[in-house]
Structures are given as C-alpha cells and as structure tokens.
Length: 178
Image (cartoon, rainbow, N blue to C red; front, side, top):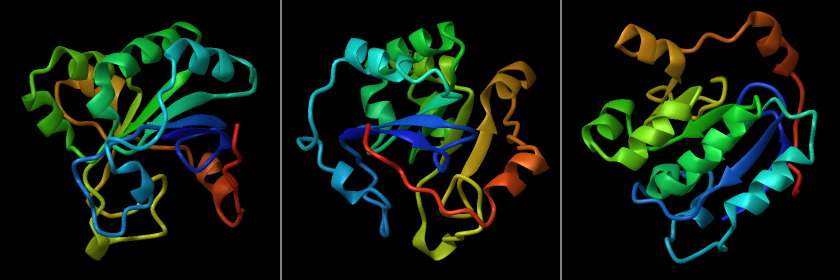
C-alpha cells in the first residue's frame, strides 16, 4: 500500500513504516481503510525496500502495518530477517491476536513472529478507542515484547521507559512520504 519514513507514532524511536495491502478484519473506524482491499496498493520489491530503509542511518527500526501484514508473512519475514541482521528492531501491527497467529501453524507466520521485537495485536474496536494509549488505538490491543514472550513461554507485555513516553507527550508528529 505504501511506505513512510521518519515516523515516531508507529513504534518506539524513529521508524520507517511499511503499510501492507489487504486486510480481512474490516474494523469499524479503521485508521487505514484504504489498505483493506487486497487488489489495491502497488507491488513492492523487498530488495528495493531494504535499500530505501538503509538510506536513513538514523532509523531505530521498521514497522510493518496494514492492511494485515500477516497476509504477506513470507516476504515480510525475509525482509524482517535482513533488517534484524543490520541491527534494526521490528514492530508489527496485526488485527489477529498472538494466539490466533500461533494457532495457524503456518511456517511463514512463525518466521515473521520469530523476527518481531514488538507485536501490537488485536483488532481495533471502536467502542474501546482510547487516544491516550501508546502506539495503539483501542484498549484490547496489546504491546507484546516478543523476545521476552519467546523466552518465558507466555505473553509478556512491553514496557516503554517513562522518558521515552514523556518525550512523545504533547508533541505533534507527521508521517512524511519517503
């Protein structure tokens, strides 16, 4: 669907965001409704995306958003591995819960989960919308620390430092096109 560089609202730090096309969830009040149709957007080469990302040495990480990134898990897992090998962290948004993704028993989904640092899971629920939440839109959505979750064998929620949160409060940010 598209990309954006210099985002600080799609995860911790300065991020490059990849918006995937296609989403089966169709959440009421979706923040990116233009990404829902599976036949929209444009085809992107992961090698070209990697080059575009690496052009910015100030990035802390990359975010896969949607649409639904897990509909394109195989290609994103490969790109995610390349990003991790270069020291970038990876945040992935999904309308699925972690438990739903694990139940799929899909090797591509498992590969994408394996390179994910923070998983923001759960459908957006308009009745639970809360604009004060960090990096998510509704109270049911979780910020999951995936390395800690893998180590512990159960869901561990991500805790961000107070200084990072305070740095974001009261400031207005814009996502600019790359």
